[in-house]
Image (cartoon, helix red, strand yellow):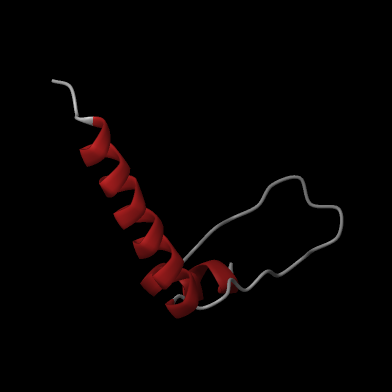
Length: 54
């Protein structure tokens, strides 16, 4: 199934606008730097307090 170029361009413009709007509404990440770490953990929602405790 092929998309028409105009449809594709309109969809990209819509997604760009959506992402740009979300960028102003979503809170900034909280980065907790720890020296000499080899791995990182990303957590959010209800799992975040457990990850912070661990």
